[in-house]
Length: 502
Image (cartoon, one colour):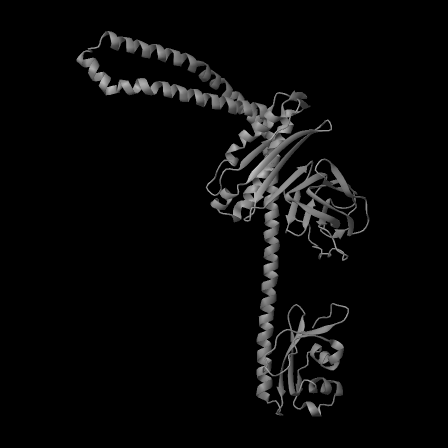
């Protein structure tokens, strides 16, 4: 029995009958069987031995149209208050119900109620378990973000200290390798001169030459020195990258080469980029433009690069879990770093891409000044949730057509939907410039859609700039492809707080 809608109704959900009898599954208005409904709701067992002689004309007419000759219905109510009934009906032949039939009916009803109560308890426990799992995941995520924040706050000092401690001994080793090489060459030449001058060594010297395998030593020693030189060069490059990354002793703004800073960050993160047991090495594509030196706080900027590239690696590793090593190798994961100068402004784009099994490429670029964002894309529409302020850029391999967008909802601190009072702009790229498709400022509707002339593009950008102080900064927006005369379907709102993740 369902009474939480405008028109209450009975919903018959299960039946067992002969194949030649009509089905009564489905919904029936309460008014159609009001007398039966009231008795069942009152908890009264309805026993009709002969439909034709039953005094209530409405009940008699309702069951006669179903060709019932007798009916036995037992009310059912669960511990949560849900009401229903289960019934047995005779068709064609007339036969009164026996007391044994009524007792069996009551016994089955008791077992049915127990089963329904158990099912409700299981569903409640399952729902609570899911809520606890979500809360635990959110707690783990918050803990991880706090740990990451603490790590980043001290990373510059740590890296600077490590680079300083390594730099002195490395310079000592590197500076002396040249002298060691020269001295070794002198000794080798002297030994060669001795061998040429005294071609017949004494038995003791001949035995020692054989024991130490002098010929092999003279051949292998230059190779060892060369390997040491290569290793020292590698350590110097690592130290240089660490020093470039930290810039710990440069508290003031200075002119820096941004490409060097990005390269130093990539070198530090190489241990995460290189091949693992479950995936090949992540490809890093550098599309560097001609950038002039930039005045900035290099240490802080390097931490931004570290966060963005680390996030890109996290996204690729997460999305690659459903693919085998061979599938990833055939369509490798990729991080593309693009730098360019646009209208006297330097633009740096760090995008991660993951290949699907059919080879299609999906790219996401998040540029966060503050807060977090979560992007969900099921192929037909995109839902973006996040804190402010932020600029989000999406891109595709092949041009897609866009013709409408909609603000879905906003949430207050208790997770209840409120009007999304925000200022934002939705822009698309025509191949040369960003163009505005839609902008809104402080709209008071809880959900609204806007069509705009259909555009064909490979890049879409959303800029969210401001919210009112009295609403949460959690929000959702959807964008759609070309729309027909029918408005985009309004999804059921999720009344839980949006799950925001890094």
